[in-house]
Length: 190
Image (cartoon, rainbow, N blue to C red):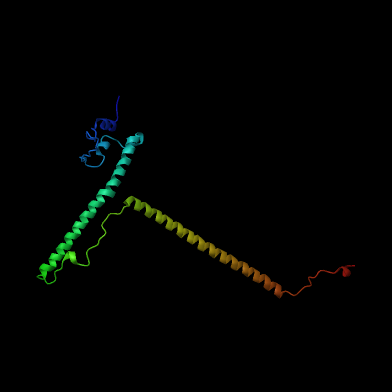
């Protein structure tokens, strides 16, 4: 009996729970997330093995969680530290340059730096897809607008032609001599 490599790795992997049943998370030693799952797997095996597809979706979900929880916090903390250090250096620079005459206290100034550094909660792929949808909607609205204008022009021209025809008919009737269009009476027909 031959088991796929992923199943063998799952069976041989030790439990992540300690003797009390608490989950103990070990640090990953992989060079990229999911490396042990992908070892020895060819691209053609993804369609045949639903477990690999599930593993890939699980990796995507884990990466989204990592990005939204950990990576954005790391970026926020690093940017906060960087801007704080930059403000401290500017504070020290002016004090040293002017021998204390133009110095100020960074923590007491009114214009404390307020910079939004948190990451967007929407991934780049979602933004790209929204941009495509918005472009498509813009094209549709433009097309509807162009068609509406063309229809309005068509109706206006058609109404003008009809009005011109009616005016011509009315003018011809007014220029032709009056003829007796009355119905002959019964007395004259006897």
